[in-house]
Image 1 (cartoon, rainbow, N blue to C red):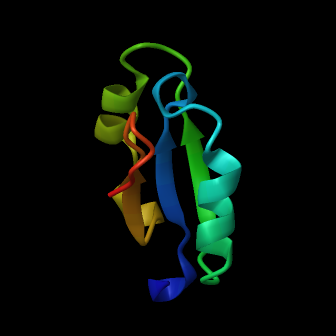
Image 2: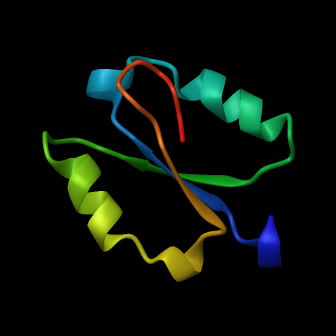
Amino acid sequence: MPDGLPAAIIFNSYTSGNRMEEIQGLLAGRDIEVEILECEQDLDPYRKALEVDLNAYSCLIAVGGDGTFN
């Protein structure tokens, strides 16, 4: 990743189920370091996206309710 920065993942286990291990495995298999920003309340995904310091990460990944990530 650029400058050795990790990727940030906004992950809502309420809508994405228990797929975090699968997603972490896919990224680790590509040698991508990640930091999980796990959501705990209804509006956390929005709050975390607005509050995240984008300079601290190489990219921001949002995991959707159907398990997709962008």
